[in-house]
Every structure is written in structure tokens, then in C-alpha cells.
Image (cartoon, rainbow over all chains, first blue to last red):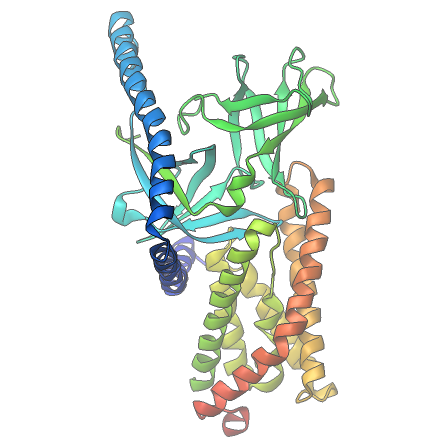
Length: 252
Length: 169
């Protein structure tokens, strides 16, 4: 069958089945709204007070971030360096999760109607979620970093050597894990003293410094020139309800 | 034609319910595959043309939602449909037990084939199989529980739409 026909059929059947999970996700949001409405005023005041403290710390971080951004821009101009990527943040509700042993994908409630580009990075408060694998009219499909098809260039926090991360270890009743290869021989990590694995910024998809997971075990690879290791991913990846899509402001 | 469309609507409903079930089971790291429910009723009860068309359309629904080459599920479902249709004269196809066993066998075959296709991508293939086996067990249990209800639903929908097999045979 010609590729055009396959693409058309895939898109058509996807859009045919998309309205149901989107409608269910709206109903779920409505259910959550009404369940929050029954909370007493005291409960809401208490929750608001706790959130105010978190918001205050975030507001301080935003001020510091603005200062750091200005400093980075000043240094880039001084050293004649290319500007680092800037992004538009699109928050998207998760419509449907598909976490099988074969792949790990989720459908989110924004698509080409919000100009979501193919391959855009997807993040949450704990770090990297994955990347946009398909874009449809009102939805997008995100492939998670726990999926075997996702490879990232990563670095251990505090180190600059690039490491290859790949998802795909999804145990029964356990949090997803990933695998790293080409780890330098001078990197040591264990379950008692894990190292944070972050994005390297190479490849241009993910900004540098975003958390992928924690490197909990490393061992010598078969050839002895590098190490391989296991990465523990954030357990919250399996029950996310909202994610943020990083849409580059500068077209690629 | 009416039979095909009626069965297609029931398969759309099945896909929607499966998707929601897997959405809720995702935090428990469980996934249920019920591809074996898409084919048996159409293959055992419907005329060849209408049933095969329904199975092919059901395969396309699954292909659209899966990151595999488009046509994988379609080819699997069509092949299973052809095999079941060829064998149906040998069994009491009206018997719900026969339909159930057909669904379980088809589900097992589809799951193993798709696992064989996709496990090569995993960086730790040896560690992938326990999860795959566990999901297969959950899937077979789910198919065993849901199949009688779903096939009865399909029969009822065909009756309401006046598209029963004996009308079109």
C-alpha cells in the first residue's frame, strides 16, 4: 500500500477514535472540579496557605532565574556566542495512557491547533517526560522516556562526558527504568549513592540540565572500555495528569 | 454492508473501553491487550465478505493507535479471520465456549507475534519478558471475563440493526 494511503488511513482512524478519550478526559476534569467543590472553607484555606508557601519559593526562583537569564544574555553578547534556545510552554492535559511492555505512550489534549511541532520536548515538574511522536488535529502522542524507542544524550550531573540513555525496562508492579551506555570509567554510582542523570542539550531537542532519572547502578560493559548502568526514573511518570510541551520559538 | 458497519461500531466501543481500562491500570504498570476479541464473532458467525471487512476495519483501528507499521494488526486480524472461517465448519460455532476459546487462542497468537516484533527494540530483552508474560496473563484473564459479554453485545447489536447472519447468509 502506498505510504500516502497508509498515512491517510492512520490519521483518519486515529481522528475517528480520538473524540471518545478526549470527552472522557473532560468528564474526569469535571468530576475532579466537583469533588473539590465539596471541600469545606477551612480545608481550602489550609490548602491555599500551603500553596502560598510553595508559590513564594517559586517566585523567588523566578526572580533569580530572570537575573541569571540576563547574565547569560550579557555573556553571550560579550563572547559573540549563539543564543540558547527559547521556548513557549504549552501545558496539556493527559487524555490516555498506553503503558504496555512494548511501548510507553500517552495522548495529550493539544495538537496542531496549538502549533505543537513534531519532536517537541515534553517535561513535568520532575524533569523529562518524553517527546512528541505524533501530532494530530487536537491531540498529540507523546512517547515517554521509559519507552524502548527513546534515546537521549545525557550527562551525569557535574560531569560533561555525553552518555547514551535508552528507555525500555518496565518491570511488573515497579517503576520504569532505563539503561545508559558509554559511561566513563571514572563514574561511580550505587543504590546508596545514586547520581542524577540530566539532559546534555546535545541534539537540540531537550534543554540541558533537565532531570531524566537517577543512576543507581553501573558496571563494566562487555568491551571494558566503558560502563553501562541502570537509571531509576521518576515513579510519577506513570500517573501524570498534566505535562508541559516545550515549543521552540525559533523554527528549526 | 449493514452487518459490517454494525460490527465496526461494536469494535469502536471495545477499543474505547480498552483504552480507558489501560489508562486506569497504567499507574499499576499493568496493560491489557484484547486484540483477540476483534475477530472471533465476525469470523465464526458472519458471511465471509462482511466479517472480513469488519475484521480489517478493526485491525485499522488498532493500527492507528499503535506505533507499529500501519497494516500490522490489519494483516494479523485478516489472517486469523481467514483461518477461523476455514475451520468454523468443524466446531459448534454458536456455542459460547467455542467462541471463548477462539478469542483466547487468537489473543495469545496476536500477543506473541507483536511481542516478537517489538522486543528487539528493548535494550534489555531478557528483562522485558517478565513484564510481557505478566501482561499476557492479565490479558487472557480479561479476555476470558469480557468475551461472553462482548459477543452477546455484538449479537444483540446485529439483532437491533436487523443485520443478523441468517438474514444475509
